[in-house]
Length: 250
Image (cartoon, rainbow, N blue to C red; front, side, top):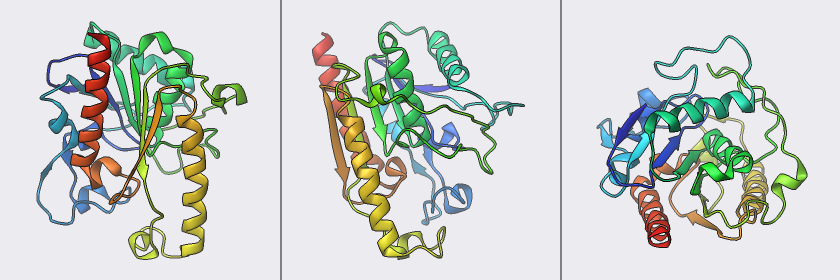
């Protein structure tokens, strides 16, 4: 567990599949980021989003089992095990207020699923291009994370199923281009990328509608790794969200 800052409600950062917590604090170079992300091609170390948020909030990130220095699991892990891992982080942090969960990709889905099961434990959700439910097929592949996560029930994705829990979702505002993904998907066509974008946008809209206080922000210059492509834009959106919660709770 790594943390910066002091003020609460804290921001608990949940990384995407196989991504280390360190990427929240320092944007990786291309060599460090492949094959997940195209990387910071300047070759220079850039400050990550967590550092931009630390002046206004306590920011905490952790590596799930199999990532970074965390021991690899010897079995496919379930929702209860992922939730217990997150609970251990929350307990160790000794928080005085329910935190805001900030999750990217698979981390966004874990945050969303946790909020559905344990809404009393958190004060808000920030989802960064989250993996939409029901998430099929099983998402471990070549990743050191071994997961066997069951699908969501339809009622869990119904409008306002999260009640009035504050929810902010940030995702790309346009489809990726063939040139942008050629390094990772050499056979991709623009039609396929457009169709995937449209489907994902619809799924994200449904996630936003699960809260009466849900809102979506569509970024102009980022791909899937919104917090690495445009860390300042994402940090500013989260700061505004954090300030609205702090004002509401005061």
